[in-house]
Amino acid sequence: MNSLVQTPKTSARAAESTPHSLHPKVVAKDVNVYYGDKHALHDVTIDIPEKAVMAFIGPSGCGKSTFLRCINRMNDTISIARVTGDILIDDQHIYDPKLDVVQLRARVGMVFQKPNPFPKSIFENVAYGPRIHGLARSKTDLEEIVTASLQRAGLWNEVKDRLNEAGTGLSGGQQQRLCIARAIAVSPEVILMDEPCSALDPIATARVEELIDELRQNFTIIIVTHSMQQAARVSQNTAFFHLGILVETGPTDQIFTTPRDKRTQDYITGRFG
Amino acid sequence: MSEHIVSRFDEELKDLARRIAEMGGLAERQVDHAMTALTRLDTTLARSVIDDDRRLDLLQHEAEEMAILTIARRQPMAMDLREIVGAIRISNDLERVGDLAKNIAKRVIALEGQFQSPKLLRGVEHIAELSLAQLKNVLDAYATRDLEQATEVRDRDGEVDAMYTSLFRELLTYMMEDPRNIGFCAHLLFCAKNIERIGDHATNIAETVHYVVTGELQLDERVKQDASSTTTVAFEG
Image (cartoon, rainbow over all chains, first blue to last red):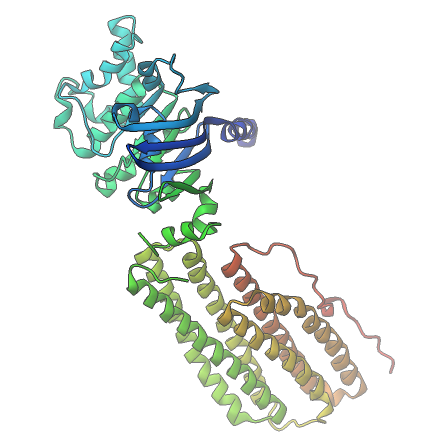
């Protein structure tokens, strides 16, 4: 009985997961970033697979956050920043002048290091995005989106009885999951996370990591982290940046056991900072 | 390799490596002494081999504990992780080598007063020399992280196996020639098997050296040349 039920299920899953991990969702070609005269990022070329977690690691100032911010054009907000090269999401150039940046940021959500809920109710924090992007046709629609997003972010059971209380009144870990709920409420395709757990305690961190692992079924996730252990735990692929150069990228298992480049080896084994 | 930012981590790794080096030296000596005890039927030396095995067990225990603590404290990655995993594996192999030397020493005591012609011992001496050389070479390969030397050791294990198979035939023949040889030769056969197993542990260590250096596990099966389990000698008497 068991085997009759389970066998087709597993084979279907295997067939489904293989092409996902091979297909690149985000493709970067020769990306350079300058802050005024400073050349911050040199010729970054990388494929980021769909529905998988990609971790960016490297010492402070190595360019990993700079590159992350190119993917939703956050660097546009810095007047002296200049980006050259190509970044494509599903074969569409995101630096195309005709592209609507607001639309892009709905497709590419972002979660920051410090949880930053709006000074509004828990419900409003999540409802804001779908409302301004016109994703809900009715109040019921909106309520459904909010509920589903909070459920997917693993926060629903903790907040369902106090949706009208301020989001800022939650604990740090809950606030971060609220920000993740807010990010997924607009059904993005890619979620960027810039050190999402560095302000959280180990238990809240574990909850967020568990959530990341669930979210990769539906989203392409790119996470910048200073914790090598976190990169090893949550990601399928890892990219190592150093001094503005993408040194090495590959399957996480390989990067953390047999890195090819000496700089990667030195960094992950704690030989330079 | 440059040093870690946390210098205590380097010290921990060095301590662990020292422990393994000490185990290696001790294991080699134990095998050497066990063989000398056998060829001279020296029960005093055999007893000291049996006693000294405790030291090897203790070192293995300590090495394992140090390795576990270092993993818990430092969350080692890449070559550091391989280094520590390698140390755990090698300490297990060396501890087993010590047990095998002890088994040989125990048989020396059992053989007391049953002296037989020295020709019966010659084959066992031969295989012991080869196994001991394998052990020595692989420990050198580990100390210097010499991939080539480790590969040589791995490739030569077939010789030990082949020698064991021919020794098996030889000892069976002696037993058939003269039933008074049976007791002595039966013990020698077990000694020979123990020595052949020491060669296997040397091969395991060679594979671990390969893993530590390259990060690749050697999966291709070696050709086993120990055919003793299917060997028969026809009785011609």
